[in-house]
Length: 377
Image 1 (cartoon, rainbow, N blue to C red):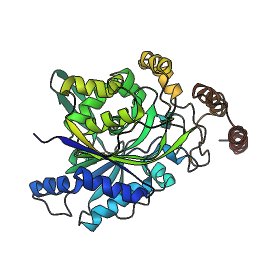
Image 2 (image 1 turned 180 degrees about the vertical axis):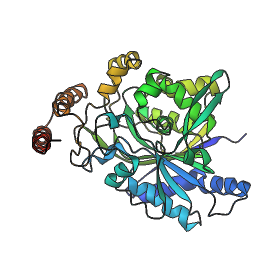
Image 3 (image 1 turned 45 degrees about the horizontal axis):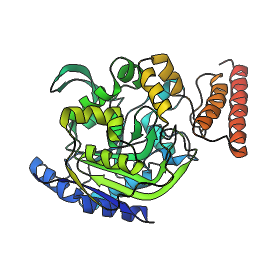
Image 4 (image 1 turned 90 degrees about the horizontal axis):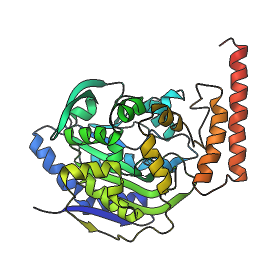
């Protein structure tokens, strides 16, 4: 059996890096093989791309999501080869409990997705019942988004960053975002462990290829949501085996992949991946992972819905309160306190500029609430 390839490319041109990673990892050959087997016309052959999107909070803080220009570059390359039926898919998340205007289409618009030549699909809005099966586990009655279910070719386009409850967010954690129910902390954390939910959708709907945008990255305690220390790595990862990509990515962060609940659960059931690497595997210098004490505390707290739901709204330093206004007046003070706490836990005090930003948020929210009150709303 041929080993899976994980390609790591480095350089100053992000678009060239993506093209090179796709070529070296065998993306185009794999896509061609699946297409030929489908016996469909190119216009009917549905390609679904799942980027990391829904932790986007502001245009001023872009490094916590897959860069839209990279996703659109990949779509352009697909269209050049005749694949015109492409959908960018995501689902809503727990931030809808706290903020307004958090549909996938609106978040994508603010983040910079144009929708030109492809569809933007909100999996939450098209959820349909589905019975998940997995060897050695009981059947699970839940939901799936139709576009993800019906896609002929699925692409996971993750972001390179840390994750407070999983040590890192790469391809497997990005798969969690295809689960369609919006209140994820209730449905996919407290009612069933999130790593089990991820395993169910990962094994029931094959992802044919994975990419990781590591051109810019976000590390530290809350790297998945905020960018206290954005890192410019100028790197891209690609491969057919998502587990192999995650193992390689973890090694670059100098993290044991078995310490990641999702990766551990997958490898316990499927075994460790057999792969080879093309590219530089040198560990990243000055990369800050989630402290073990924080990781352990979060593991214990995962089953407490109130805790995780509240913390989900924390640490949002750069939130755009015009595009995503808060649902509750007191949240503006909560942001202020929790931003300070996350900064301290990440080894940083807030800079003067960051303090000014927090105060601007508070002033804006105060003014808006007064205006709404005056209008009798």
